[in-house]
Amino acid sequence: MDTYRNFIDGKSLEAASGRTYEVLNPATREVIAKVPQSDEKDADRAVLAARRAFDRDGWPETSARERGSILFRIAGWVRSHAKRLAELETLNNGKPLAEAEGDVADAAFCFEYYGGLATKVHGEVLPVPGQAFAMTLREPVGVAALIVPWNYPIMMAVQKVAPAIAAGCASILKPARPTPLTMLEMANGFAECGVPPGVVNVLSGPGNSIGLALVRHPGVDKISFTGSGEVGREIMREGSATLKRVSLELGGKSPNIFFADADFEAAVEGALFGVFVNQGEVCSAGSRVLVERPIYRKMLDAMVEKAKKIKLGPGLDPSTKMGPLVNQEQYDKVLSYIDIGRKEAKLALGGGRPPDLPKGCEKGFFVQPTIFYDVDNAARIAREEIFGPVMSVIPFDTEEDAYRIANDTPFGLAAALWSRDHFKVMRAIRRIRAGIVWVNHMQPAMVEAPWGGFKQSGFGRELGTYGLDEFTEVKQVYMNLDEKPIGWYL
Ligand code: NAD
Image: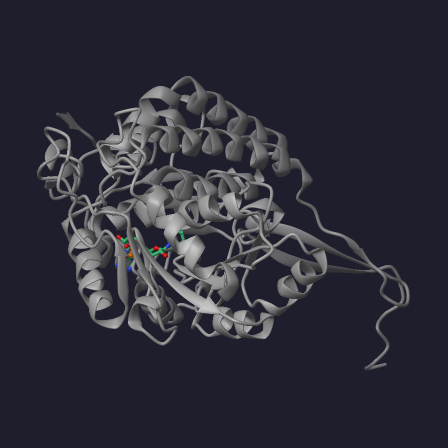
């Protein structure tokens, strides 16, 4: 079993209290590591280190080229440690190894993308009247707390820390309590790749102590948060005392809409992939599957047949297509929603623990791919985020019906639509209120393209150039070119 330490001010440190907690493999419930149980004191240490790096040691004044080179070196470090990082991600989160390998490859590219972008952050000259010159500068927002969830531990963290480095911010990264291992491991990479002390700090621990301490800390300028709406609201409230800049990437209940003219085979797979990939622990999961009436029954039957074959098991087994949920809490939550679903709709598949788990996984947090149908969009399983492998199938009759049902949700993170009629596709794109719309696909997330939600799915954008803007402030500069006095009091 490995023991990890925090990474603060360029040093590997135990929690100030000396306390640790155990991290589990969710497929077996075995303890795989001990990590620091950080608290307010550690948060304070990390913020002081970040402030020193930002205010005193000249990090924001480093050249963009230098920050870009550091990011390219980190990308190289991730690639050369890809096998170890992917295996660790799978052991800690449960996801199939092929998915973790994809996440690590995306993380490496994300460092490269922002490495390239570091030298393209600039302001503009503004056409002001008179003898004057005006311009904008883009400057780093300061010290940023990066608070991430457990479903994509490495990628969620990297899509914050890479633009923060590119912009010249100093940051404190807090992984989710159940899944800190890949980021604690990556701290070695930050040190080896020349990230100056205090510029990136990583500390593990519970959200309601250390996360909250960062949100309340007067030394933190910006909170970049990905997680649940409930915690997002608390962060807005608590961060308002010091008027922190806040960006929130929250949950969803995304519609995956199938028109009758869609390619049938692609549709069936797209519906399953949309909600069962990553065990359904995906913020943009297509958990509401809207199907046009003429293909409703046929598609339901085909989805059930195909979903029956999804192989559950430990993520490190290459034949596994679905791993365990992340922990007991999430397992209990998903099963309780399945109980609710049994009362609200008809069950076509799944509905509990798989009967025949591979040897060694008997205690793992596995839940069967579950399909409810004839679901009313007003049902709780259609309105609330379950964050597990639970699909709600809802029929619709007309295009208007589809848009009405799709938009009838407090969320607005993502949506997908499947059709071969490009007129219909264009109409649908405009009518759907969501930050991401996929056409004839569901779930691709590209480092180059913005990610974020409408409505209660949050605000701010990650990834692409938009993700870097979140870590900058705009400064206006006005230069008088007229040597005469202003002349007002003469
Ligand atoms: P969560 O809100 O419980 O926790 C997220 C992070 O916040 C963790 O690091 C946690 O320790 C920390 N935290 C908890 N309480 C805190 C507090 N009071 N103050 C400060 N920090 C605190 O979410 P989760 O269960 O880890 O993740 C699942 C949620 O994340 C889902 O709702 C999902 O939709 C959302 N999510 C959104 C996106 C997106 O891009 N929009 C991506 C992934 C996950």
